[in-house]
Amino acid sequence: MVVTMQAGLIGEDPRVIAVVQKAQRYGLRPDVKSEVGGQTTITQVFMRDGDPKTRGVKACTVADHIFRPMEGVDTVQRLTPPKVSLTQNGTDYHRVKIGSVEIGTSLPCRLVMGPCTVDQHVESVLGALGDKGIRHLRGGCWKPRSSPHSFPGFGERAVLSLLKAARNLNAESVFIEVIESSHIDVVRYARNQAGYSGTIVLWVGARTVNTILLRTLGAQTEFPVMIKNGVDDLGISGLYDKAEWVLAGAKEWTGEGQLVVEESLKPGNSALILCLRGTRQTDNLSPWRFIPNHHWAELLRARCWAPVAIDPSHSAGTMENDLVIRNAEEALRHDPSLLMVEGGYPANGYDGFTGLCDQAQMVPIDRVDQLIGMVRQHNKARYGLDVF
Ligand code: PEP
Ligand code: MN
Image (tube, rainbow, N blue to C red; front, side, top):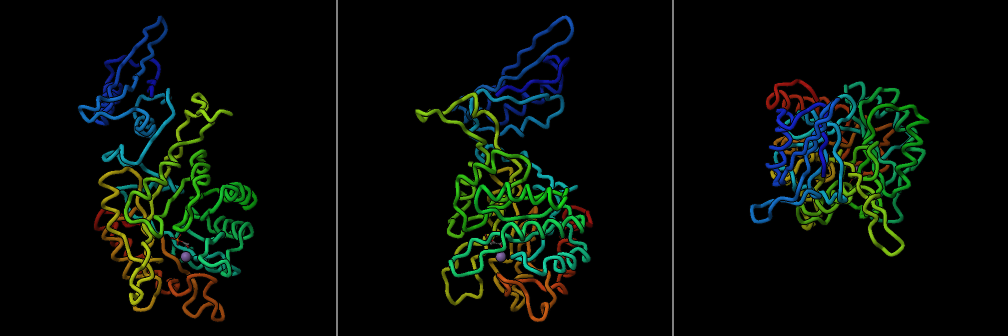
């Protein structure tokens, strides 16, 4: 990896020294080279692999975004294909922009709401949430169901109506689940059709195991990516494994199956969010649909740089005894960057209709103020900011 500084900076410049010191903190061996010409000076910092005897790391495992935003940095170039994992940055948390706000560790939590599945009432549901002040929306268009006999979502049609509603509400961001690579193009097309200009976050759900999708999401930077933990994950390593595919970027292989190095150097997509949504319930008498895993947030933040989101809806699975709301309250104690909650229908539905999927866990519209109040309270207490 070579970090090229802006023209004119000499090796002793504090901005160059900052890059060198950061590289050393990451366990790399930075090597500064300056070319002094008649017109200007070009300084580059070559990131050599650290010495394994002193807990040094390989340069290919360090993410580009660690140096790219630093003052005085012009470009970051790879000499070998990146093999970035989530583990190489415990202290420099990465930020992801959704609309006009940034999310990440040590930043306020943002509330994302919307129906489990986009249906014929999407405009009204999102409109009601918009009236409450919700700026970040969600809606399922392709649903990976456990049974082939269950409703699979309206697909392309749903994406278009979701994004049209988001455009009308001037929503900051919309979260959409994708199941296969072709869905990325469908979303791009629908966004242009709908004229939606906020951020679209594409998420990979708990039931999706598709490395081609993950790689394709990693080969683009137009859409941030959220990865939910797998239903059967036993710990955080499942999220690390999936994230690595997104962070690897595009790869080219020869007919003989060898990596084409010069075409495999571009970094992957580091606008990455990890989402905790619970793991498989093993107690069939429990009222909880999945076992909440909110405490993984602390484990992730101690070791990795990606923002951590929590979805309290799916682990609760029901609004009986206010379970979703209580679970959201518990989730906030783990300081998530995002809280993604399903809901927005009137308490009695539209003539009794409260959605096509996960009806039991929808937070009715008249309880949304309570959720907003909880998030505001959390952000005020922790960050001194009255936002949600
Ligand atoms: C959803 O958010 O509606 C969903 C299907 O989530 P998960 O993949 O966590 O089950
Ligand atoms: Mn759902």
